Length: 462
Image 1 (cartoon, helix red, strand yellow):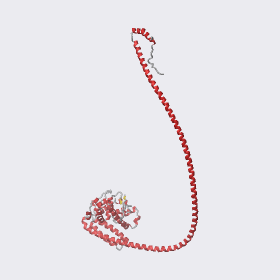
Image 2 (image 1 turned 30 degrees about the vertical axis):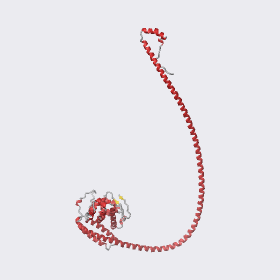
Image 3 (image 1 turned 135 degrees about the horizontal axis):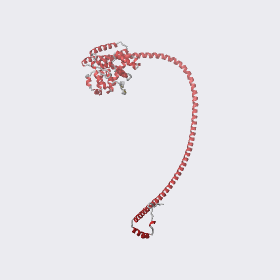
Image 4 (image 1 turned 180 degrees about the horizontal axis):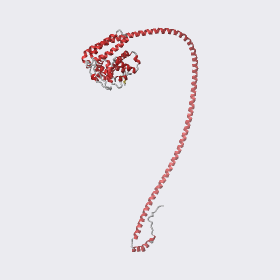
């Protein structure tokens, strides 16, 4: 992932994005970056990064007293480097300058056309054959063209030999790669031997700068900076060699100053040479060009004279054609206006006719609907009258039915009384029956046999 950043106004440094690598912890990447910048950069720049120091747990007084070695600073600061983007960007710019010089030193101009496979092969060869530091390889792959080669870093750190070398350079252990490393048995080279070797190599390399061509001097100077930065960082590890380191640091400063002076001188001479060569080539080309141009201009002059006559004639013809076309356009515009007006009138007339017909049809429809509505209203009123008449008749029938029910109740009551009397008459004694037969029959003037009642028959209404 690449975290995009904005360039601040007035900033002289390039604004680098924070480049991450999948499968590699950021603290390992940032440790390589800090190691590549050197102890002096960390010691002089970190006191200004108060937020970062607070996160790391280091005070500015401790930095001034140089209580931490370069490896300790790298180990403490690398997990929190992104707390201060400005500091990260400063270290990235320093690293980028070193990369620009070292890739030219090792590959000349051929690296421009390298594929990823070729980069991978050459970087591994530089590590194994020319002793390129692992942190320098990581920084090159990480920052070259804003991370174009960053995916090559993970395979690089999956090799045990590279992990051990990275530990010797930075003091940081990379674990969990699938093999066991006994860190306690790792022995770092003797510091004094490294110091002697550094001093001899550094002086020899500075002497080698004298008499070299500008390009070769620049390449060798870049190599010296990288070599000195790598080896001096190792000298800061043990407390007992601080005096030795102070002396060496002064030597390194002198070397850096001489290298800077030589670099400036070489650049100046190289620039002058290139400027003079460029000017000379430009003047030669200019003379040849002017002579050719003069001859061509003479030929061109005669040709242009003939062309001018032809162009004038063609211009007159074009003007005539143009006038004819203008007249034709004007006539067509007038005809178009008349046609448009006529069409508008026809369309308006047709629209008015259609609107009038539509209005007539709507009026007829409204009248028809109005008549149908009145007819339906009349039918509704007649039905309501019929319903009222039927309702009155129904009420009369209901009243008559109630009267009939009452009459029926009276008849049933009389029938029941008569039935009771007949039942009673059957239980009388013989004398009483005779008496009744002699007297009552005469009294009532009808014979018993003549009495017959159909009890099951109830009066009905026809």
